[in-house]
Structures are given as structure tokens and as C-alpha cells.
Length: 332
Ligand SMILES: Cc1cc2nc3c(=O)[nH]c(=O)nc-3n(C[C@H](O)[C@H](O)[C@H](O)COP(=O)(O)O)c2cc1C
Image (cartoon, rainbow, N blue to C red; front, side, top):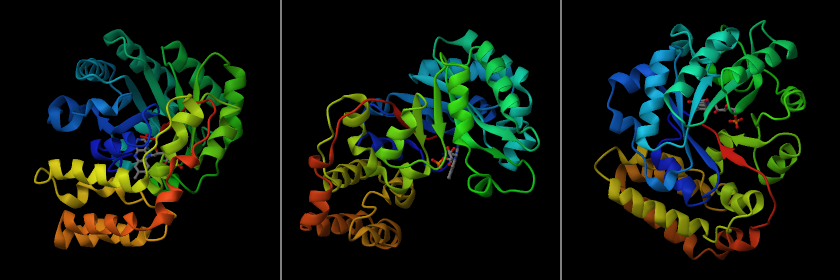
């Protein structure tokens, strides 16, 4: 997610889940080919498994970017065919590519030829009047023939004109059934469902229909929900850290970054860490206004006020953890 899933947010997420696949923000091919690569691509090894999301529609440029992604150590490349922003629309990529499945297939094929990394695609259920199950099925079939290895489907169509990107994430109704149906039509392809999903129980329900679940805004609003996902969905070691311990580790980490970017930007991913816990507003205020006027000490003080608060610690403790199987991911 642009301006959300930067490396600092992903570092925070890795304090909560080691197994979940994380996605970068969308990086347009032009930015990657002509911009500051270290700034755009560098990540901490702890962030793996990590998918680099690209925006573009030129097979050669996408292939070059996929090669760069492999050299940089990414685990997967994801092509964005779902973003309805006008900037992206004018560049003729993002969601507008849903109307050109053959071109998407050519892009995927070119990227596959350039790297052995898995090439996956994030898309919508339709755009504008191209909005039927048959067209969606045709899109997936053609892109899979080009080598697309997983389909992450935002369960809404997008209106390319008339709705803002924000409205396009809320206004078109959710249509999970078509994604379940895709799984029935193409049982051997992995499908990841996305849109309006949050919380382990909802994830578990969707996993009875499809292979994976992508959580976008829910990860930003309440990252701590991921704390039991490794145990519950991956059969991995449970995370045993409390919210306060995660907050402390994060502030230590941010301290090492101080001076390299504005503090408020560095900490923006942690606003939701205490979501649903008494004192969460105090924490948000500390990370916003507090940090702006008083620096990191404002956040450290807010954290200490939780440390004596047994309720927040007990809510965050390992007794929350359950076990199970499946594969949720955090949205790009
Ligand atoms: C601030 C913001 C930025 C986003 N940026 C991207 C992006 O860069 N690439 C992408 O594929 N989706 C992006 N999305 C869409 C989300 O990945 C997701 O598809 C959408 O929000 C629906 O899922 P959710 O209800 O779980 O949030 C963005 C969403 C938000 C709120």
C-alpha cells in the first residue's frame, strides 16, 4: 500500500509475524529504472518473504525490473493490475490493464523470462462495463497461460472514471463469490482473496474457499491481529511478545533511523499497535503531535504508561494464540 507498507512498517510487521508474505508499496517501472534504487528497494533481511509490487505495462521494462528485484533479494514480483488512480490510468497500467489481458500475459511472460522468481498478479474483479464472471475468468486464463503464478484478487470492480481511488476501495460492492468461483474453475491455480477482510476468524473462513488471504487496511489499523497468525495459519512458533515489547523494539529500531527521515514518517506504521486497547488514542497522539514537538521521548513515555497497565499486557500475551493451517498475507 502506497505510503503505508514501507520498510519501517514491514519491520514492525515482522515483530508480529515471520511467516506471512509481505508486499512493498507499488513501484512504477520508470521510478525503478531511473530513480534511486537503494531508496526504493533496500530492505532488512528480516522482512523476507517479501514481494516487490511493480506498476507498468511495458514487457521489456518490467522484465528489467524483475531482474533487478531478483538481484536485490526479493522473493517474488507482483504486477499491479488493480490500482485505479488517475496517474496510473494515464500511464495505461494498473486497473486499466484488466481490459487488456493479452498485454498482461505478455508482461508476465517477459518477467518470467528474466528471472526465476515467481511472478504474481494483483487485480480486480472487473473495470467499468467489463464486469462479468466470464470476462474475469478469461482474464485469469490468459494471464495464467502467460505464466502468472498466483492471483491476488481485490473482490471489487473499479470505476476508472467517476470514483476516486479511495471510493474505489469502498463503494463498489464486495464480491467474494466470484473469487471462490475462480478457485472452482481453476483448482490448480493459487488464489488470494482481498477486500474488507480483517481478523483471524474471517481469514479462517475465507481459507475454506481459497488459498490465501490478503489484508490491507486491517494490517495498518490493527497490526497486532497478526500476532497469532504464524501459529494459527502456518503451524509455526507462536509470537510471544506483548504489544509493549513490540513497541519498545520498534522505538529502538526507529532510534537507529533517526535523522535519515522525518520521525513522523518513520513511525507512521505503528499508529494502530494498541488498537482496541485503553490508551490507544494516547499512543496515536504521542506518535503524531507528541513526536513532532518532543521527539521520540513522547512515544517512549506513552509506552511506559502501558507497561504499568496490566490490562494491555494481558490482552497482548501469548494466551491469545491458537493453532491451525492456512496462509494469510499482508496487503501491498
Ligand atoms: C493507502 C492505500 C494505499 C494502497 N496502495 C496500494 C498499492 O500500492 N498497490 C496495491 O496493489 N494496492 C494498494 N492499495 C489497495 C490495497 O492493497 C487493497 O487492495 C484494498 O485496500 C482492499 O483491501 P483491504 O480492504 O484489506 O484494505 C492501497 C490501499 C490503501 C488504503
